[in-house]
Length: 238
Ligand code: ADP
Ligand code: MG
Image (cartoon, rainbow, N blue to C red; front, top):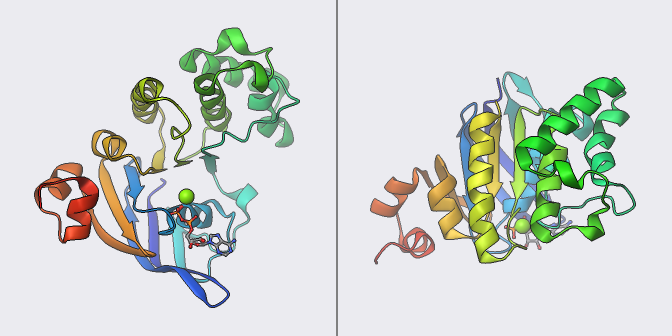
């Protein structure tokens, strides 16, 4: 069960507080999207959930477990980044297999998972290539595949489509929504693309200056934004 609770979650860098007392309850298998202007704390929040950034205050609970001090490698979480962060010297196959190899999974199991993910993402024909021989969309699929093979209960995606052109973004949006339905995982997705947020999310979290402004379904946010900031961000008439 990968319900996620953020209780008064805080992040400070020196004297600067960049995430302020965030309270958020995310249901198991929900697709949550964080939106808000650049610098409002979206990536920092994801990175705390992933264990890539220390939590300065409050609690992160996944399922029934307090996760604050659990190392990143021991969290059942995969993260997909905007810049893909593929290993340039490894083939696509190796990029996808590497994490499982580190965990000492059996070779035949690794092979089965890589082949299966590649098939779903339509990259089976690319497994022997290196990342530099791939298009942006193909690289993004490999990054998704690398996360998928681990079969994590939580998927974190930080602006995964922002480097793609508009047409490909549309295709990948649909692919990621399909992936969410197919996998048994909770998705937390950061974007500043309003269309992505409105079309993909079960619920949207609107952030500003490290605070949550409003959390609701796309329809409710659109119909009943609590303030001008949310209205402006969601694009409802003001
Ligand atoms: P977003 O993803 O919403 O654009 P971030 O979470 O990346 O925002 O950043 C939130 C704030 O935290 C920004 O003001 C950023 O400059 C600051 N910040 C992020 N990482 C660090 C760091 N390692 N040291 C100091 N400040 C940081
Ligand atoms: Mg960011």
